[in-house]
Length: 382
Ligand SMILES: Nc1ncnc2c1ncn2[C@@H]1O[C@H](COP(=O)(O)OP(=O)(O)O)[C@@H](O)[C@H]1O
Ligand SMILES: [Mg+2]
Image (cartoon, rainbow, N blue to C red):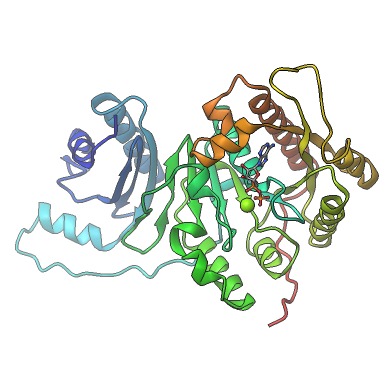
């Protein structure tokens, strides 16, 4: 059952601020409360910096919500500092008639995606090879391991997240005008498709697209994430370069079908990431073969055999696995529940789970061996 905002406010009246001896709601310390199904996010606004107290209040708030509302609630609590609150609270407690001075704190410029541990780009040279399908199933598989996962769909011309995750609602907006991701199938989601009319975007010139994507990436309020999966637009042009320069990617995975034309483009993808020093975690072969349901022992290599696997050997990047062609994969994507969630027992779903395990391993190895990726400036033609 979906959680209601009133249930959250009511639970938080049980949490007392030790200094003022009043609850968080009465003190007005809860801001930007957003509730979507079981996902609850809010800012706990404190009058001064005090990490120990902030952690204690966060813990008490989580416990109250899990106890009084729903033990499965997924919480995203951000701590904000607002000095003007101090006057206000002391005014409230001490001298009631005192004039309240609104003293706005200047906003601090924040690095992009600073609360995300690993950022993984899913790229392909060519469109239609299943990049979005892989990104969606990778994100859900990672979330199933208990990790906190986000998926950002940056494909302005062909956003897929709204369809693949069955999102019809609009994302929430915080008072400082940040977008709050939608939480569905265990993943925090945002898509260019939530914001931009695809038909409209078709007539935009390149620079408009790059600036829209850049702005979009800076204006989302992500919760703390273990993994963020970035679904890149197909190709290796300006938009892809902008994205790579805007966020410090931990690594990239390249999706290709086994056929030669797709492989040529996959090779360009690997070259692009090499150029900007983003480690390529590996190549995934999608639509590797087809097995008819009534002949489970057969494998038909419709687009050629082991093309992407051979390319990975040639380029000396890891091979992360193959995904068969299966009606189930297309059907579950079209109806809004990725196959690893809709039919986890199937061979198709298991191939994605295997891939996500290898991605986790590749990230661990990468993080042990290399420093965090630095953003590299490459000039984009105007
Ligand atoms: N392994 C697969 N088996 C069957 N259909 C697939 C498979 N991978 C992708 N598809 C389907 O192919 C189409 C294109 O996939 P998509 O992930 O949108 O590609 P891209 O993001 O690379 O353009 C979608 O309809 C998707 O459901
Ligand atoms: Mg796509």
